[in-house]
Each structure stands twice: as C-alpha cells, then as structure tokens.
Amino acid sequence: PTVVFPSNTSVSLCKDLGHFDVTGKPAVSGNCSRLHIEHTDMIDGCYVQRRWIVRDPCSGREYGDVQSIQLLFDEYALNIAPSVVVECDSEVAQPAYGGPVPLVQECTYIGGNLSLFWLGVEIKEREIQSHSCRRVVERTLVAQDSCRSHSYKQMITYLDRSPPVLSPTQDTVATCREARSLPPPKVNDTCSEWTSEHEDLLIGTSIRRSWRASDACGNVAALRSQLIQLRSRSPQLTVPLNITLACGQAPTLNVTGGAAHLQRDIQSECIDLGLMSSALTYVDERIIDGCPGSLRRRWMVRSVFGHRVEKEQWIFIDPPPCKISAMVPADLKDNDCDGKIDEESRNFVDDDGDGFIDEDLATVPPTIIVQPPQPRVVECPFGNLASQEVAASVSVVGGCSSVLSFKDGETTTAAQRDDCSRVVRRVWRAVDACNNTANATQEIRVVDTSPPSLRLPPRPPPAGFRCDELRRGEQIVAADGLAVDECSGGTKNVTVTRRDEIVGSCTVKRTWFAADGCGNVSPSSTMTAKLVIS
Image (cartoon, rainbow, N blue to C red):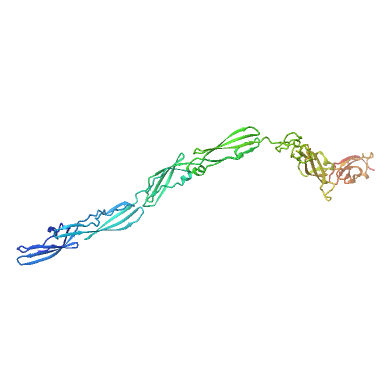
C-alpha cells in the first residue's frame, strides 16, 4: 500500500491531541486489505513525539514514522496598546501575564499530567525623544513561558499637560515689612521647572494676595488667594523744643520748627503698598495774649490704622526790648537792662567797686561816637581845633549824664612839621555820673588854605605919580603892613607884588597882590592916580 504520514504540526494543550482532524493521521491507498493503524505518544519537553505504525495483515509488513507535534499552551493575552499617551509623571502599567502560577492539564492520551510555567515578561525601553514637555519611549515586552516566547512593541508618549499644584495658603496678620517677605505657597510640579508670582489688592488696611504658578510648558496653576490683615505700631511724634520769640515776631514754622513724626510701618514700609501716610496737623491756642505772652501749639498725628498721638509745644513771647535809661539811684528800675533790679542802694553793697553806693548794678558805660571821615581836616588857624564844628563831630551815648573832654597831642614828626599843615591826635574821654569811663581817638589834620589879608595902601599922593615912580612888578615884604597872614607865620612868609599900568591918558592904575608861603593868593586891591610927566 501507499502510506502518507502526517507532517509535523502544533495543537493546543491536550484537548486537540485526540482530534486527528487537527493533528492529522496516515493516509493509505492502493490496497484493499484492511490495514491496522496505531500510534504512541511520548512527551519531549514542549513537544509530543507521536510514533505512527501501519500494519498490513496480508503481507505482514509494517510501515512507521514519527510526527512531532508542538504543544501550544493556552496563551495569557497581553493587553498592550500599540501607542499610549500619558502625563509626564504617570506610570504605564505592565501587562498581566499570570506570574509563576503553574498551569496543569490532564492528557489522557499520554497517561500523565503536563505542566506549563510562565517564566515572566522582560521589558526593555529606549528613549526616542527627550524633552521636559514631551518625551517618547519605545517599550519592548517579551513574554516567555517554559515552551515559547512572545514579543510586543509599544510607543509611550509622556506629555506635560498638568499645571503646577499650589498648596493652600492661610490668612494671616502681619506688618507691612512682614507682608512683603511672607513665604509663598508650596508648589509641586514633578515634570518641569516652575515659577510663582503674586498680585496684591489693597482693601482698606488688608491685602488680598493672589498667587499664580506656571511651568516651562505654559501650564498655569489656578489662583490661590490669601488675606493679609496689616497691623502697625503707633506713630512716633517728635515736636520742636519750646521757643521764645521777640515781641511782634510771627510764630511761623520756619521760625518755631515743624514737628516730624516717624512711623516705620507707614512712612518707610507701607507706602509702596498704596497706604497713605499719617496726617500731621497742629492747632494754636493763645494762653496769654500780647507782649509778654504765651502760645500753646498742639501737634496731632493720625494714622490710617486709627492711631492718634498728641504732643505740645510752648511758644513764649518776650516783652518789648529794654532801653537803657538814665540811672537814678534807688529808683527800683532795671536801668541797665540786665534783667534784674539790684540797686546798690537797696543792698548797701558797692557791687561795682567804684566807691559809691548809688547806682544800679553793672551799669553800662558810655559810648563815644566819632563821626567819619578820619582823619578830619580843619582849616587854620590852629585855634580852630576847638571850633564848634570839631566838637560836633564827637558825641557820647549811654551812661549816666556823661561829661566829654579831650586832650590833644601832635603826631607829626619834626621832619613833617611845617607852617602849612600838621596832624593832631585828639584823645576823647567821657566820664559819667556813675564813674564809668570811655575813650576814643580822633585824628585832625590842620591845613592852610586861606590867603593872606591885603590891607589897602595909603591914598595916592595928590600930585600923582611921576614917570620915574612907576613900578612894573616890584615885590615887597609885608612888613610895611600891606598884608597879614594868621596861618603861615604872620607876615614873615608873605610877599606883596605891586604893579602899575597907564590907562587912558594921564592916569595910573596901581594893583597889589599878596601871597603866603603855602601858595594862597589874596584878591587884588587897586587904586588910580594922576600921572605927572616931569
């Protein structure tokens, strides 16, 4: 006969080993006798070695072959998607593969049990794209049991689509300085870098602070709101010192000084948060009007937090200025403007040591005033030094009924002294009734600017002048009594010039001029006479 044995094949575990329409069986042709077909199975690892034997009863011949049947155990299906998109911090679960639990099935054809053990799943990953916002990983899974292995591929994309997570914030109470440095809420972002910022909204004396966080992938966290109730210390107020003003002087701030209040929280810490600084005002109240008088200035400062601080400043007004008056002994007056009435006549003590007990203590000495210019120029004669003009140039003020006197002394040297000028140093001395003295020096320059005095000559001779008596410019001394000079040494330094001139017919005009040694020339003096021609 012609025998065709089945080829190697695979079947599911146990259940298909007895189904020859699955595993196949020998095909016989060309013989009409009845053939005997039998087989025996032996387990060889994950295979069943099936030995086929075909017997021909007519000829007694046997035909045999071995068919290898691979045992395909029931698979645990691995539920693996070919591509997965997850959050960046998510974990992609590994497929369920049964673990090391043995799978046992009865195989009646071989008279025993077959056991299949899962050896596990091997996972290999390879990063294809690396970025904090998008990362792609290729995962390879190899599932293997005791008889075979299965390989799967999966593409996993990790995306950062979740915003940072802001932890809740607690409402609090803080000063403005503390409010600026309050710690921000905690931020959690496991995928990318993040930043946080806040916005403040001022509501009265509170701050509504809103926090926002964003990551490098553009994801923005939801706002977290925090209420900060501001608190502040009471303002510190420093007012100017008490001051005394003169009578009639206005108590303006540039004179009395302005108060300065220092509120650290408001002035230097809260101003940038939009809080207004404290309001500083003052109110004046006249306690005693007039001069002398007093004024109470009440300074007040109010803060936006409700604090109020007040302090006082006193402004005193002096009486009118004291004027030094004539000092009458024991008049119970402050004659010397020393602020005290301490007459010697009351305590019978010579306080100023002048040998008298009669005046106010510490009397003010007189003052000598010398009118400018210095030195003073006086016209000769030298006796004019005692003239009323020179005396009027010096005056005395203060003291008690002062008496003014002077003493002259010459300051020119012998080489500088002449008959035309000299310098006198005059020392003035004032002594008042209280025996107070004062001294002052005055320089007086005495100069000769006056011409000599020309006296008219005797009448001309009745017979007139003869031609031989005419003079064309004769100088004669003043000893003949024609000229006198009270400054330049009397007449010894005076010269007289006589000049004759014929005018008209038979008439002579005679003119005299006088000059001193200082160059001063007197006015001319003329006379006319008959001319006699002899």
